[in-house]
Image (cartoon, rainbow, N blue to C red):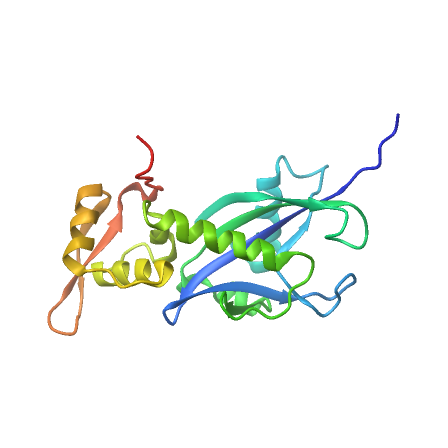
Length: 217
């Protein structure tokens, strides 16, 4: 028996941190459905080209934004008959994190970065995808090094703390935060400093730049 095939797409919530708040990349659609509406970067899976949905979203991000994110994680599948007027569809969605300093290519490609707390009307069910991605990031940030991926490769401890505070939307006590980072054992001090408000501040980096999840083990 022949069964009707769904439309299979991938979408990415490309998150960055600017002006102390989380922002996402959006572009204006140039075709139907939802022509002229703002949307997440995404596209149809190329079954003759893509080895996986992760390969699909990496291709889409390269083609549409001009770069690949340092951190990419599958979020969840959004599906159903009502999310796309063309046909029954499913989207494998991803969360991508990128430091603000690396966004020039995406901006030149026509993407706008808007606050996750002030979204315009979005195409399809992209508002639901954004909400799930932000909840994932904020939920995992309390016990993992996920916020590190919104920073440049080298950063000060103050910049690191401010990043956690912006994501978690709370103030963190300085000495407790630094003890937590020390206990995790994920920071590596460099030999470099930057000028601070009172004295030079040492630059650090994440060991091996890999995700550290305190909830495991």
